[in-house]
Length: 291
Image (cartoon, rainbow, N blue to C red; front, side, top):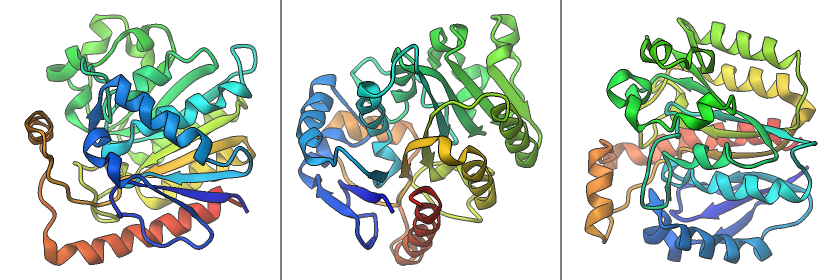
């Protein structure tokens, strides 16, 4: 068994036997939601000597507000892979995470940075049903990785027409059902076997399955399980995010950005129950990923 890692910013990840728990609470205000590149690098410099160099298991990062730390975890693979020996990155997320963010890097922009890495052949963002890929938000999406065939959106129940007017339909895979989306992706994977980094933001799942801080998608748990099984031994690294946690920012600009993204308060009387459901799902996924 590989050793799971908890990047503990917000105490939202429950106890996991045998996991390495790294206390990062001092970085919560600085890193949560988004941060300057300098702050990101400071955290990376701190984490690098504190992570195992071998047998690294799935990394749990807490709230989806920390999803941009996936970039750091993927960057670490540069020592083992190259443009001639590349990997692919598969991201389950209700949002493209390829949006413009001029202040550094944040949880909705990190995919564009991953797509720039020379050893990353392609990034697949799976299960998007949010309005972030609609025409009203088209200008916010970074188009260059889509044009360069470094990034694909796998979209569910969200009609998207604007890409055909700018020559990008090849990067947009649209489906009417989650079963069709997952089946098409697995069929594509059968034709190409690349080492795969898998990142799971649980906001891709239906609210009937789990509750997260963000607006949620339509996938079921078995869609994640089927994909993990199909990728199998090709998975060379993974992370899980999307836990429930509340935080009140000290800085006004983060309070503003968070409010603009529509994050809502978590009902206090529901938090313990929802976190218990989150915890059980984490254990189920870890059993599959860290075998």
